[in-house]
Image (tube, rainbow, N blue to C red; front, top):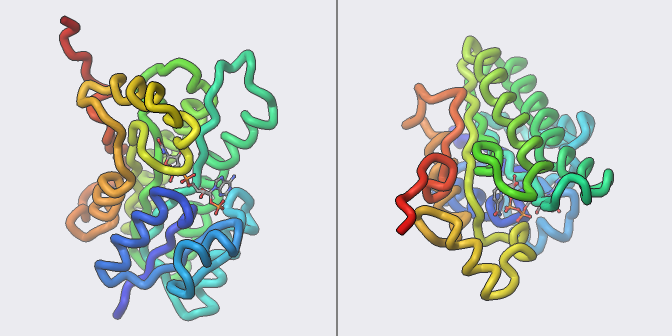
Length: 246
Ligand SMILES: NC(=O)c1ccc[n+]([C@@H]2O[C@H](COP(=O)([O-])OP(=O)(O)OC[C@H]3O[C@@H](n4cnc5c(N)ncnc54)[C@H](OP(=O)(O)O)[C@@H]3O)[C@@H](O)[C@H]2O)c1
């Protein structure tokens, strides 16, 4: 039987990389976005395209319902929704802070809840992979809002993994450093900003969504059958090592 997977934020940099990899491995895909034209631009008429805002419980449930309507029972979730709202907290507007929490934390809660709810109803095992950030793991200037949202996500991974282990549902996350995607375009717009960003990393450079997707696909695969409740860094050493300064 063909396995099916949900990719949220599918129109974004990481989402597209996930869709390409999962499709190449034979997964049937449910791809979601808030805007139909984003999905059409990314995927033409391929995949089951669901327009929903998964930062609300109703929007998240709508994705699972659309899958059911098409006789699909997704056993994998790659939640790739998120945004980057940078700025010192004393200058950040309430709207920006709320938008950051909504995209990075609240959407994750509702989407994961709808996914595990459907799996439990079907008495099916499954796996989810979420996306955190290096900023949740080490203090980084001007990342207060996103650090708060992603640290919440990391706590959710451990809690939910504990709750659903008995149902054979695995829940993990990845924590990347900066990557070349639409979300980071503003941060690395000029050559100087790009070089400056790349130099922050012990292994210097800007990451690619493809290398992150490779790790995410592995976490969803049977090869990771005994991995749950983990957050895997992919950040050139940024959050864990401090090289000798010469
Ligand atoms: N790029 C980086 O440097 C970087 C670094 C660390 C972590 N991350 C994380 O990686 C994940 C993927 O990001 P990306 O770089 O692929 O970003 P991206 O290219 O901007 O894609 C993210 C997608 O999420 C959807 N989205 C944004 N805000 C939303 C909201 N409030 N509600 C529902 N959907 C929303 C958007 O799709 P629609 O507009 O089509 O709905 C967007 O295309 C995010 O969780 C991000 O925080 C990225």
